[in-house]
Image (cartoon, rainbow, N blue to C red; front, top):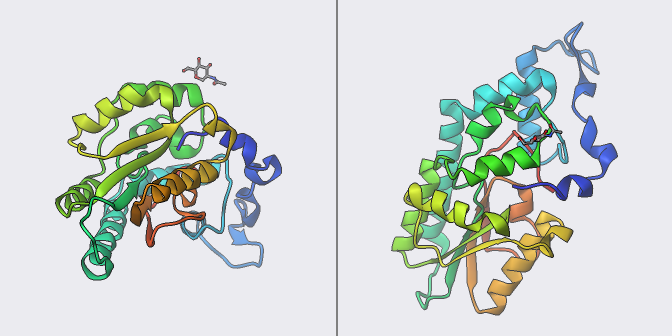
Length: 255
Ligand SMILES: *[C@@H]1O[C@H](CO)[C@@H](O)[C@H](O)[C@H]1NC(C)=O
């Protein structure tokens, strides 16, 4: 998360209006004449964001903002997240031959991975409004983001198995103490390092910044077994982890 620079990096022409093109509000048909409801349209939009077919959008399409709001506050969102976390634990139990030498590592993103930004987005039409980075950072600095319970469970499971946990976030360095305070307040503690974005890192894309951070960990001898993130920019790029896991997030896209 965190996007002052990122929006610049997403090509403007791509970012702006991918959305509205495919559904005609007046006759409720797709381009090819299929008769659909607004729910069909918005669910398809959401699904294609998760599939990483729709990228670089700056706002959720206006007509889908309330649908996206319902999703991120629904039981379905919780079930989807819980399932992703369950798959992490299956992977840990079946496919990770941990060496337990202090070099087994796991990476988490923070926003919408460990902490939820839904309370902020609730005030901004669930991604229907263009992000105001100033007010977003003001909200982050209140340190009141709620925890995502299933992710906390994985965090504790990893800790109990002796993995070193790295938090790699696109939050900026100046939010370090507020971020730490927020994490501790929801019982997230015991990570090995919290990596935030320096001024220099802001010049590159989030994906490049996160890739570079992984490279440094690998150079220090860590074996990165897994990454959990809500954005493809947290889980794509080389070097990578043995497995990556994507949590749902249809509210925004970070390049
Ligand atoms: C962004 O948020 C800040 C702080 O809440 C506010 O002062 C500013 O006017 C907002 N900018 C825009 C473009 O809405």
